[in-house]
Amino acid sequence: MEEKKYVQKSESVIYAVAALGQGLVYSCMSSYITDYYMNVLGLNAMFVILLMLLARVWDAVNDPMMGMIVDRHKTKWGRLKPYPIVTAIPIAVLTILMFIPPIGFDLSNKTTGLYIYVGLIYVIWGMVYTSSDVPFWSMPNLMTPNPKERGNIISYGRTVGGVGSAVTVALPIIVGFFLAKSENADVLKYAIMAISMSVIGMPLFALSSGKIKERIDIPNAQKRAKGEQSTLSRIFHCKPLMLVVISGILSFGRYMLQAAAPHVARYAGFYMGIDPETATLEQLNKNISSVQLVIQICAAVGMFGSMLLMPRLFKKFEYRSLMIVSCLVGFGSSIVSLLVGWFTHNLFICIPFMIISSIPLGVINVVSGAMVFDCLDYMEWKTGRRDNGLGSACQSFVNKLGNAFATVAIIAMYIVVHIDVNKLNAGSGEAVVNIARNLTTSQNFAMFSLVTIVPGISLLLCAIPLFFYDIVGEKKAKITAELSVMRKERGIAIEEA
Image 1: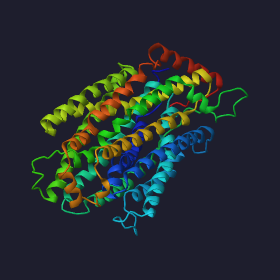
Image 2: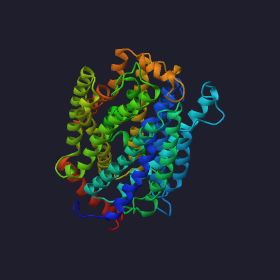
Image 3: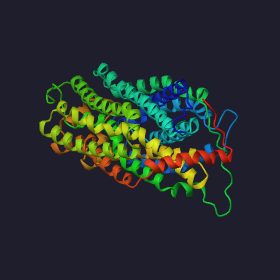
């Protein structure tokens, strides 16, 4: 059964293109929200920390709710297909609002109204995004029963989606070079990013609603019998899934390589061909863009290089092995990157080590999703129930929680090393320049650690739960074979390609 193909190449391409569109928009938030909130809007650090954490507490309710809706309801257009097209426009609008300073608010005077506005937009964006993200990444579950084919669909989708993220990450950096003379450089570059990525990305994302086939007709979740486990209980009692979830949470540092890049570029004390004591505002702004560009290129090369190799590596290695090895290698390289970068104070020498440290970004992005789907196979094999939406909601929640923890770690570093963001004004003005010039060596070192040893330790912790994950080898093959028989006995239809 594993050798049989169900999905046509054109369908996989459409799914990947839709992931590209999603990546263009999601990366606006994941890569730049902390820099925008702190260094553009100048919001209080503790407010940003609380916003991120409280929003994730709400996601703990919101994500499972969306998963249950997906599992319990099927429309005439399909179980999952309607959601991307319905949510595309709201997500685009909210993303733009998130990155454009609200009209009528004085950014030099942080009123309560500004904080309420920012908090509402962020929370509503997260809720609407969840209502598209959970169904979209559940689609491979219904596209094919073949685990290898399913893994490849996820791999292609995550890889092309990562390309979208890279485009978004690069855009503000490139625009920053052209706006280096402007006092409002950051305000303008983030507005350009949000508008362009939303207008391009969301129509591409909506393509999945019309072109994807849901071949596996899983019946709507039925009311549980007396004494039967509840849906949430099944999830929490699925040991392999919980191990993947715990591993995903511990891997939060992988988001820092991109999210912390603008902060490191501002405050880690790396200068490329300029003297910070005599440099002009324009030169310092260009240096920020240059340092950020080097870090982001390293992250992109390591991430995409590993993602492109995943389909081939899937043929030779187990998911668990790929995850553990990449995380350990990333941890070791992060230590070298920190030491080499700090003692030479030459960012270019760090490039090969930062690339190696970024390899786990691609591996985790692809493999963790494939492992979640294998866990859903296991749960269906054990219980006869398949909670596609709720299972994918676990991954959605983990990803957003990881982003929140990465954001909190960045902001916490500001607080620990006493970089006072409340003195920063909007844009890249003289206040920012003066703070950057007067940071201590310890402050510079702490900020550089945000893209080196801090994510490295996170990767090391991520690997530990995976040693206990056992859906591999003969056990996985047995589950797949017996699950095929069980579905036939239950009358679950699987369409051909």
